[in-house]
Length: 378
Image (cartoon, rainbow, N blue to C red; front, side):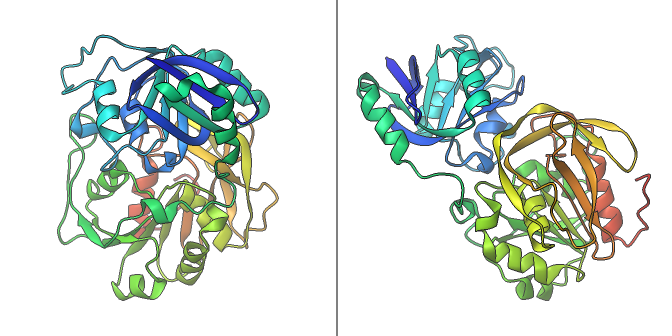
C-alpha cells in the first residue's frame, strides 16, 4: 500500500507503507546504527520523532521481548530503505511490521533514505508528516500538516514519558552479553530520575551491586534526599532540556548533597543546573558509531548517541570541567564537577544498541557512591 513522507519545507518522499495505517507527525531525524532497531524504537528519547535508518536493510532480526528498552514503541514513525522479507534470528518471536502495527506506529519502506539523510544534513532536522494508506495520496495536505506540527524547541516531553509512580528495579543484564549479574539487596541505594530512562541503564547499575529506586521526574529534591540515597542518577529523555524547569531546579538543590551521574538529557539538565546553556543542533547525533575523546585519558571511545540538543560550548559551568568532546564537531560530550560530586556524559555508555567502550562510567559512578577517590586516569 502506498506511503508518503512529507517535510515542512515541501520535500516529499514516496514509499511503501508497513506497520499501522494512518497519519502521524513528528521531527524527522536519522540514526546511523548498523543494527539495534528494536532498542531504537523503544527508546523514550525518540518520542515525537520520525526515525530514518541509514543502514539499507532493516527487520531481518525480527522482534524479541528481551531487547526492548521500555514498555512501548515511542517513535512517531519509522523509515527504512528496504524492509527484510525474511526474519532469521533464533531469538525472534515476530516480525517488525506486525510489531509496529500492534503498537500503532507507521512504517515506510522503499524510501530513498540516502537522499533523505543528505537533505536533513544540509537543511537540518524539521517537522514532517508520515502517512500509510489513503492519506498518502495527498502530498499537499501532508506538507500543510507537517507545517502545523509542534516544534521540538521549547517542548517539554518529559511529562509524557516519565513513570507515573516510584518503583524499584532489580533486574540485571543477560550474562551472555555483559558481566555477571551481582545485584545486592543490601547494596548502596541509587535514586534514578526517570525522564525517559532506558532499561539497560538500570541493568548496568544493578549489575554493579547497586539498589535502584526509580522516581518520576517531578519528584522534589527534598523527597529524594529523604530516601537517604548514596547517589542520584539523571536519565536520558526527549525534548528540549531547557523546558524541563522543575528538573533543573531539583538538580540544583541536589548538587553537593550526594554524588550525581547524568546521561544524555541528564547531562544537559546538569549543565543547566550548574548555570550553563543548551542549544538545538542542526541534525544531532544519533547512532552507535560516534567518536568521542576522553580528555582526561586521551582515549578515543566509539559510542552510542541519541540527542538533538547540546551544551553550548561557551557555557559558564560554575567550575565544572569538560571531560569529553565529540571528534566530529567538537561538541561537549562530558563534564564533571568534583567539588560538587557530579559528572555526566552526553552519549549512552549502556550500549543498547552500541559498543561497550564506555561501560567504565558506571564503575566510576559506583566508585563515587562508595566514596572512592577519582583520579584523572579514571
